Length: 629
Image 1 (tube, rainbow, N blue to C red):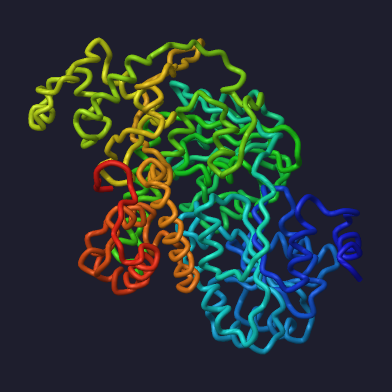
Image 2: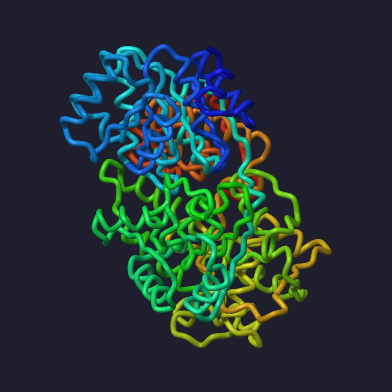
């Protein structure tokens, strides 16, 4: 039986979808793979087909019980013997399943990552022939991913304890370049076949709305789509309960889902939704992963999520059948406040140093800022999402609110120049609130304390309100004229596109909807990946070449240590190495982001790399004067 026979016999398909055959062939040949494929692209086929062709057992690591049950049930219905091992089973049931697996009863076993460190499961795995280990929802292994689960790190330890290393296959629907690199390094994939089939879901309509009353908007929308099934996501349990109760008061058949409900109630509500007893589900982000409900026609976000990864994964639960569906985000400035509170409440990883936890927090801040930009942009929403995941989009898409609504355009080039002049005049030392207050000529104590009244640009935009100036600054950040640092200070810096406004005939145009003026925007978001965007402006050609060599070394170490590359050193640290060109431990410790412990672990290897590249001769690898990043 070959792969086509298996596909036809067990899954009923006559041909493979885009990308599936490439990954299947690689697995059969014994090669590791990473598949990044959108929801509905058929990721499971990519490991289930080869699992039936390989001689031994395939272990699939899956994060949720509901996901495992659904997959195993589907496989068993197709005539494929499969089982799952997780906390929903008793110890005797688990023992029985492992005995049957050892006897050759099952070809595919789904397991929760926590199971991998138990004595019984490890004993089984050491004795059985494990042909492949599949990591589903592989983004969960990345601290930079939207759904990091520390339990996924147990996968690496588990693989090391096996007598023979199996083929490793990893799959996810959403992964930025950072997440992809983490998956490759932490899992230690060996010369893998990497396939990215694209992120675009053409059947989904995207919109960001800013209603004065979100409750009124939701009730009106649901009533207009009363015959359809939909999900309404909220950031907090309190909001879930509030929205759920309002829908029920309106006679709408709805269910709710959050961690504050009992397990039995959550299971019943989920079943009611899946079977359309209650076609509307109001939930926190605890709901949805592994729910293969194909007829969800809309996903409303009552609050802005913390990241575009979260948003796209949750919004992507609409239209899994390929039919048209709507994804609408209801934004208000308070959403940023709530998300920042949730980030502040997030537990730190006790296995990381303070520096490493700070790096993780910086990544979280960056993702929140990018999410905020999505809510603020007047450009094509689909293109924004695709660009975020490293893919080009076609402008305009014609299937998002921003592409179909009408705008009024205002030329604010001179205003933008004044803002850039102000940021430059204060030497990029302040954040949005101070800059906006200074430009508006505000008379508050903090500005007096900083001595900003004496600057030339103080009050230069006095006819405008601070909120209007913040809105303009926000748009300037989106258009790369400005960016903000990825730390708690969020200092405004001159962006890479600023020169075009200051020196050329390029105009800065602001767009506002004709229906209603844009409301006040909270500009707490900064420019993502500032180091990546700025290094070509900072480093000359030789410096960029050295940077790439240092980055390659970082990747090599990350693979050896099975950890994300940015935990070794952030990009800004590598750039600072190129600026300072350290030749000794004393000099290396002056580099931003290099402490004693980091130097003890990695410093000598980076010094060797710099020494080899320079031949021990110090030269200038950057433009202008040395700066502190």
